[in-house]
Picture 1: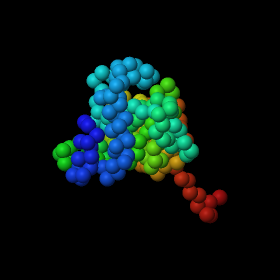
Picture 2: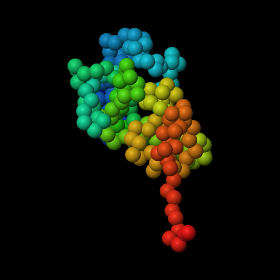
Picture 3: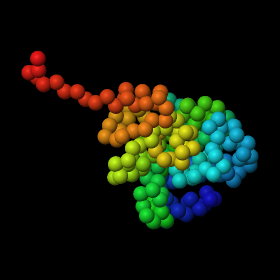
Picture 4: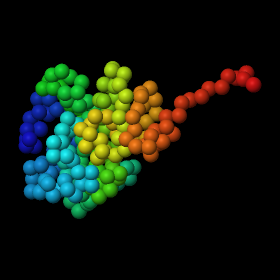
Length: 206
């Protein structure tokens, strides 16, 4: 989709109310999928390569040069490191609405992942707490367990069928009432440590 197409969607109220963030996202999308980039070569350089039948239900990734800044954030910079740019939505079109065409996506933030080190990532604005928060709503409604992925890239490969925690300070508030399925043992231990329940002791206890 051309950038002017996004501008039209914003003007019609069918896309996010943060047009600046939308433009940044789609500029990265354009570079990876439609620009002067060898897509297969670019994807081969991503350690966690996206499969050929990749499902874009979690939002289309892009490619950009970025520079990390304070507070775990990033800015776009032509001379910066190459990163995969992943959109972070408050809701994901088609997951919560039976009529995806009428669903309005709310872009909350962008997540930039270091191609050579998928565990390193930064947020554009620092507003996003998790990738896939719409999945939490689905799980709450269906009482289904929530898959938790270790990195944004592993979450992306799973087409957003679960969550990836971006800000662990909020993990307990978001996840304490959910049944969780961790991607691996290390992440399971990290979740266990973060979600320790409050324990109250009676004042007159012996």
